[in-house]
Image (tube, rainbow, N blue to C red; front, side, top):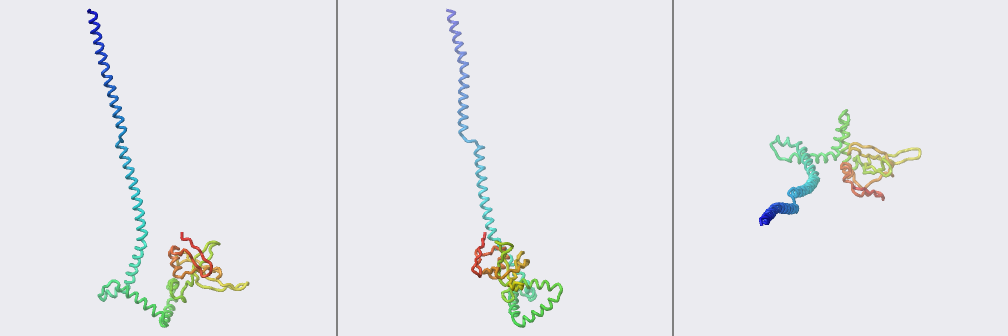
Length: 272
């Protein structure tokens, strides 16, 4: 009997020991399962760093689009306003410059009205033009030119300025540029834009040939080259001298898309 009791007690103690050993194992399994569940749930949710990076890239792309749009609109405004501003500035400068000729006289008289000197200057220029168109004015001008042409240094300045003013003169008889001309230069397939200044007759052993003196500007309007071209090789477009000067001064930007000539030929001009 004693042996059976001792065996029973030993069996109970071994079961308790096994139970104590099994309980932490179960607890550790439950802990690992709980940790795995937390990891799965955390992986299913986006991290704060990833969401912030997506937000930053979206803001940067929006900023680039807005900056590109704003820069294009700003440049468009500059392109539109720049010629208007330059035109108003030059006009305002010209008004003040012309107004300065007679405004000091009015200031001495106690009359301070802006623009009165400008109106007086324009009226004076008009009256000079009317007077110089008469026989008496032409005689006085010829006498004044006779004195100026005998001055060593002044005569060169006067002759150069007179030629420039004669080029845009509305009087066709005194106009330095007779017609607008297009010549083939410097090689076949290329053309040069210029003005006919005079014509002459070339006499040689084979006979006579009519030549045109064509002035081709190379630096705006004041410096250029002179070419003697056969009259039959000169192309005369349907442009006035004033329109030709505008084309030269603008660098060709005011060139029409199609140039019609006075003869049956037509020259196509690419505006691009």
